Length: 127
Image 1 (cartoon, rainbow, N blue to C red):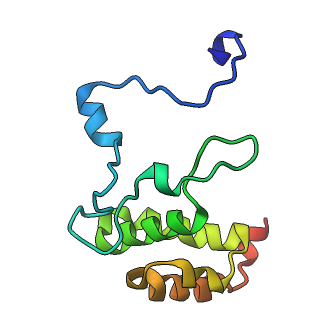
Image 2 (cartoon, rainbow, N blue to C red):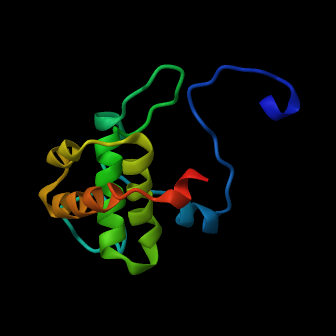
């Protein structure tokens, strides 16, 4: 509605998709990220983990988001961007190494590895 000039406060987002599109965009609580194979990290029930930052819709806590991105990228080569996203989160938000302590043990070592790699100064990122 906002695009059409009508400002309205809302607490949800409605998506209109085809049935085929629904299969592509929906993440279901309890499913496994990445390749879909069983793993320790699963999509959580949003009602039990979501946080609501000021002036924002409900979102996953940062540690849970990082955990899911790592589990996805580690298990599915076609999801390599998920690993890159974690590196960018570490660099951009200056995430602490200790965030790894909040992650599932199955992804903790990968976070530590990426955290170490992200500490390298990249002169190209300053342009």
